[in-house]
Length: 381
Ligand code: FAD
Image (cartoon, rainbow, N blue to C red):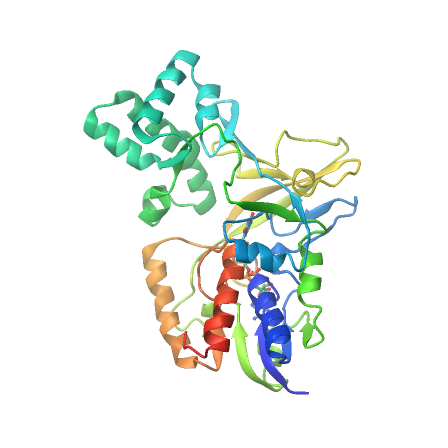
């Protein structure tokens, strides 16, 4: 049997492209996945206690794009869910991202009133303002209280979390990362403000099973594409694995950050007040997530996961996060030049092939765009 397409990787990028090609073009697709399951990093499954857990860290779906929500809604119904995160700061548990409720939880009421008034007067209400912007403007205008607040958040919420997460100081990361850290001048405690938020009602793996149910799609698990690509005839390739692997690291290994996950089961039904609690300043882990908050599952006992950031070592652990530094981006661009030479026989897409952190909706958007522009309209990448 000859396939029109071989797709490497059964995560969101690969699965959405397979679905589009199979259902809209009627072409035959083989997905090759090195893991023993579909769904990539969004994979979920029931643990030995019957609790639905996310194997590669907590995944919460959110998007502002109606077309992405509508597209995925063909393959799942949704459980309405607004993620909430608390951070342990100076012994208090306060909402993250830092907002007006956090302010009132940490400071005496009259001082919190004063800070809140200044923030609202200067920036308005229900707006996210980068703390570096507040700091810069407060320094220029001599507003000592706002400068104090910006420094406080930077030091207590951001600095040590960044060190743990990346093993780098904020100054060593791309300036765009630090520039994005906001104060949310609002009483809205939701972690995301997107128009569409929810969890797939039967979980992500069930969503992927429906995505891949088309008779033109075959899935081969437990197979590295390099072992079988030459053996299985196909016309074109879509590659969603690591781009530096594809080119045998000719321009050096692209740096990633990895994670170790420690799952714990508890006999009590509820462990923490919200889905995720961040620990910016204490312990080796960055955060703990309790899955039942996310999934709404009703079952005795509860399972949590703690995330321990780690150096990435090829072949030993999983590359999760491209490290956001401008020099690494330049290194990636050398691979992009190689990728262009493979066009149109090979299409590169996804968080590993683009060396770019994507939320799930962004991975879906990337796949839908590639389908429309590069596959249907034949534009080059
Ligand atoms: P992946 O899901 O990684 O899929 C790529 C697949 O390719 C993998 O299954 C891999 O095994 C396979 N592969 C690679 N090389 C080969 C090879 N040589 N042969 C065969 N197969 C290969 N996004 C959100 O929107 N909300 C969240 O709350 C959220 N939380 C996250 C938490 C963590 C800890 C992490 C790491 C990510 C989170 N994300 C979240 C991002 C989300 O995981 C990504 O958007 C999504 O995984 C991207 O899909 P992808 O298909 O590009 O990559």
